[in-house]
Amino acid sequence: GASIRIGIAGYGNLGRGVQAAIAKNPDMELVGVFTRRDPATLSLAGGASAFHMDELAKHTDDIDVLILCGGSKTDLPEQGPVLAAKFNTVDSFDTHAKIPEHFAAVDAPATAAGKTALISAGWDPGMFSINRVYGEALVPDGQTYTFWGRGLSQGHSDAIRRVPGVAAGVQYTIPSTEAIAKVRAGERPTLSTREKHVRECFVVLDEGASAETVRESIVTMEHYFDQYDTTVNFIDALTLASEHSSMPHGGFVFRSGNTSDEHAQVIEYSLALGSNPEFTSSVLVAYARAVHKMNKAGQVGAKTVFDVAPGLLSPKSPEQLRAEQL
Ligand code: NDP
Image 1: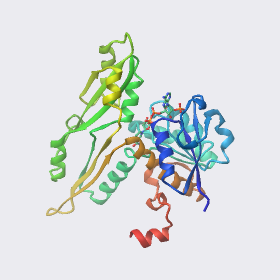
Image 2: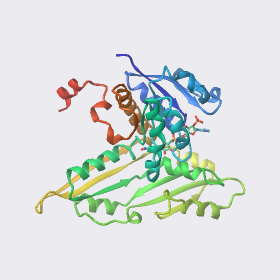
Image 3: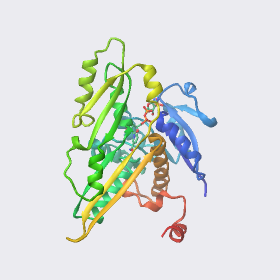
Image 4: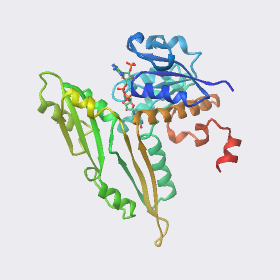
C-alpha cells in the first residue's frame, strides 16, 4: 500500500533519531520537520523539509502520524493535547508519576477529534513497561526489578539543564552490580531505591551562578533526584564536549518468582544501547505504524503501549507473521 506519511514535531535528539529511523523503514516517508525555531536555522540531513510549528495546521491532510519529539518536562504537556486534536500522535512522555495526568490531557481532545494518541512509547516507559507487565502476568508470585544504565538519562539531563544557573549538563544513572547479581540468581532481595542505583551529574554553570544553589536545586528535585544519592560535579564546557557527548544507555527488567514451592523462574530483558535517542526514536516510529493501523480501525483516544498488539508494530501482514514468527 501507500507509505505512511510522518511528521516530526520538534527537532532535537529524538527528532533527528526519528528522521534516521524513517530511513530504515521503507513503508514510511517523512513529510517534514516542524520546529518552534526559525526553520531556516536547522541543519537538516538528507534534504528533508523544515517548517515552523505554526504551519502544522496546513498539513492535517498530508500527515498520517505526527511524532512528538519535544521534552517531557515542559514541551509535551503543552504540545500533546493541542496536537492530538489535529493529528494522530506518538510521544515518549517519560515523567512516570505524571503519566495518568498526561493520558487524560490528550485523551479528551483525541477522542473528540477521532484521532489516536499513543503516549509514553520508547524504552522506559515503553519496552521495559511491556516486559514488566508480561513478567507480572506470567509469574504472579514474584517480584519485578528494573535497573537502568550505566547510561546518560535524557529525561534527567533535560531536567538539570532547566535549573536556573545551569548552562549545560548531563546525568548518568549507574546500577549496582551486587544488586543485579542477587536478582539474576533468583534471590528476590528487597532493595531500596537508593540501593539499586546512584545518579551522577556533570554540570557547566552559567557565569556568576552559585554552585551550592544549583547543587541543592538538583539533588532535591521531586521525582527526578530526591529519592537517590546524587553527586554533582562541576566541569567546564570543553570537558563536557570532549568527555560527555555520546548518549549510551540501557538496563534490565527482571521478573523473579516461583510457579510452585519447587521451582523458581527468572525472566530477564536487557538493552545495551549505543544511542538512547536513536533507539527511542526507532521505537516511536514502529508505534507510529501501529497508531496508523489503529486509527484506521476506529481505535481512537489516548493509548499506551499496553493497548497495542505486537503484530501492529510490524510492517508484515498477520498472515506473514504467523508463517514466519510463530
Ligand atoms: P532535546 O532537548 O534534544 O529536544 C527537545 C526539544 O527541544 C526539541 O523538540 C526542540 O524543539 C528543542 N531543541 C532541540 N535542540 C535545540 C536547540 N539547539 N536549541 C533550542 N531548542 C532546541 O530532547 P531529546 O530529543 O533528547 O528528548 C526528548 C524527550 O524524550 C526527553 O525529554 C525525554 O523525556 C524523552 N525520552 C523518552 C524515552 C523513553 O524511553 N520513553 C527515552 C529517551 C528520551 P523545537 O525544534 O520545537 O525547538
